[in-house]
Image (cartoon, rainbow, N blue to C red; front, side, top):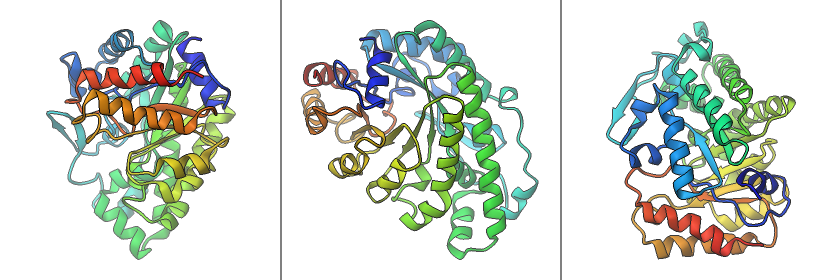
Length: 342
């Protein structure tokens, strides 16, 4: 099988020849070859070149398109910080209060730095898309985008006090429209899967009740729109998602990318035949600071927990740290080949 055939069979719950493996190495790759996320967020050609180079060197089954997790908010003017290990949200949001978001107007993503992600997607699809799965991030999901725009403290306070409910709903719906405007362009560019990140909707940040009210409906709306276009959606949620995994599986997403704090056995139990799981090897203790032998063992345990069924893609729980040893990344890919054969 080609890599893309292998991945699409797993996403569709059909047995591939082996378990696919897609480390979340989209930022790690940039630093591995001497570049940075800051440089690549303004250069889609360079980004695509480095992802192709890494896929050919390491042999994983898919590539992500994303240079950071602040792109949508940044494209609207939200401050960010440039660090040695990537682009991160700034200490404040775009607005002084959630009520100020009423007048927010969204640009065409092609007129912002988001266009570089679109270019990178087009290049990857053209150059390797017939063989390798291309997963293009539409960046933040609506809840996380709204949170970044307002600033975390301001937005969470508004949710907790239930002040300005109409403003909250208005901003979430506006955020949904902007996420979709970008996601639709990534689908136009040929992405096999578009993916949205909702780290701020994890159980590490909000309660299941808040997730159900403020995150779930908008994730589900994006999934419905993607499917109407004939595409596939993946949802990435960092942190602890054990308590909301069942709801994530009910969004209509095709893939859920889940992090190491989430209980693997419980996630597999509630998601089987509903949504393909991608994850959740620990990015810090195991992949960054562990040995290749430990990486292989953690991968083996997950692979053996799901076989002989399908619906699983081996991956890191979150984006790999730039200082992750290359031999550990190779150990993950090697584990899929050694233990993942059906």
